[in-house]
Length: 182
Image (cartoon, rainbow, N blue to C red; front, side, top):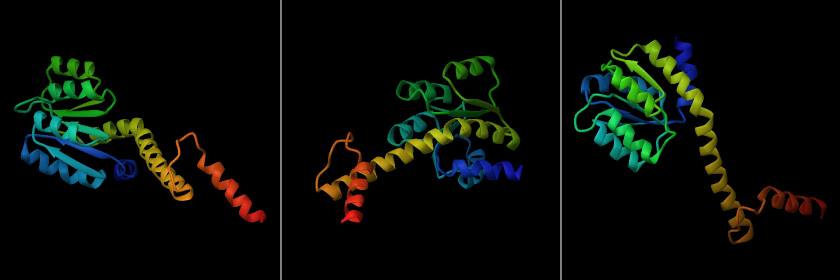
């Protein structure tokens, strides 16, 4: 089990998590695990708070309870899906009503864990979700960083920005070849 968590941690350390839980005791005990696994963990106390935080920051994954005051997890996810149809979500809830499972599936949730949370089940769910998003999310962030660096290189080399049809690698290769051959 320790090896599995260590392996997951290698991927999750790149991810930003939104964690929604209204029970303070459950929240605090779960946070100990989550902080060791994720790059960052943003905590919300109910669905309304979760939705608000979701709109202010980009997350890679959502971990949420369902039964909460003000707005439940399913209502929150329904609102989130209006803006983001892809973000993965794992529900952890004591609610075991069939209607909730069906609604979670309709809203394209990724996993549903029944409380009390079993660490083995959580590890399996997290592994599945991280496999799905890990490389995609990492590649997206890497691409954004490279595009930012590419823009900076183009600006530094040319003194002005060019559009991205300009191939900086070809340009740099030509300049290096010119220097080497002179």
